[in-house]
Image (cartoon, rainbow, N blue to C red; front, side):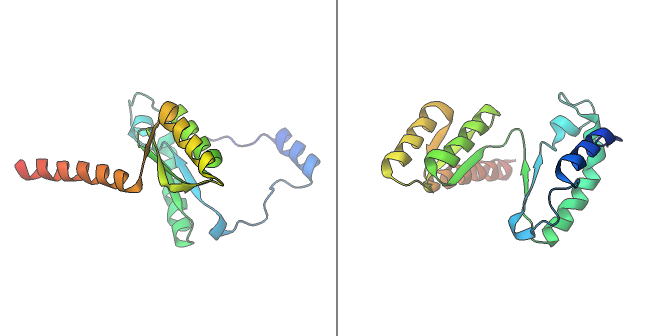
Length: 163
């Protein structure tokens, strides 16, 4: 874990500008989520290709924080460098498409789940689907996503039973 924090001159500048150090006096558990980025072997393991030695020092504080947050009902999202991202929600052509683009640029495999997205019009929805499928990833229905996930799981189960 790092032994440094915000420098005093920066803290003083923040206090001078806004009259207090922290912006938020309280956080609402039902309106808060924790996003944990890349805490996986490629970054945390000794000798790993993208090793960040200090990352091993934050495992315990992250685990402590996540346990407490879960007890408060705060969602904890683990973002890994190699997992596929399924995008659903609204608006298809704004937030969902932007998320798909960003995820692709971060080397995620992206699937926009077309029947789990909504826009203000069919044209806007279709436009985003067409942009994503041509440039940023894949477009599938929820049933297609589930079918592919189940197929892989069934393949794994079959291999285990053959050994």
